[in-house]
Length: 293
Image: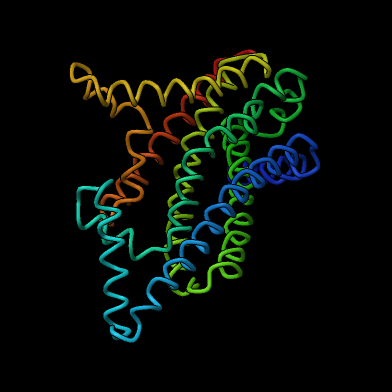
């Protein structure tokens, strides 16, 4: 219980410092603007496509019943997605979810790791660099210090995803006439929950780098380009048969599991990302434990 109290105290103080930090506000604002900007573009395009479709269907409205019109729209969507996705069950799963919700989940999975690399690079070595960690460790355990730093970063980073999700839903309700909040709420909540272990994976990765590297400036470069390298290695392993199995050692290999139509795949993907995050956090703690600070 004492270790938990120390973790929560460190996390709470770190969240307060992050919210007062200009750096944190700038990077969070950039992410929000980028995510909402791309989301707003998709919302605008969907509204535009719906208007064109309604005009085309209006000419057939006298010949078709409302049920037949809905079936025609559904068939067109199936044909469009069938060009990109071979599994008909996955296609049916995507069609049942509003496009803007799927798009925003894709944006989150694509850009959140890079936001984390810019936000969390100094979570350990920032205090080592200015020697304030010595005073913190006089009153807390090293494990509580690492856990508190990771927890505070999770709170700040995921807080902005909640705000941007709510703003994007508001834009969708305003600009897309047939957008149904009832059909979007549960998928949005589910995808946000799946974002938690996904984010933890990369926060833990940055915690490990921050424990290994003394300079915060070097850490931000290594973290950013390390995530880019993960992407490149995953793409290389995916197409190179000789090392195809090696792709499972890279977190990005499990991205598609989070958006699978099978709940078991979603849970397995979340468990894998959670495992990666806990592994990175444990390695960060072990590194700090043997390090002279």
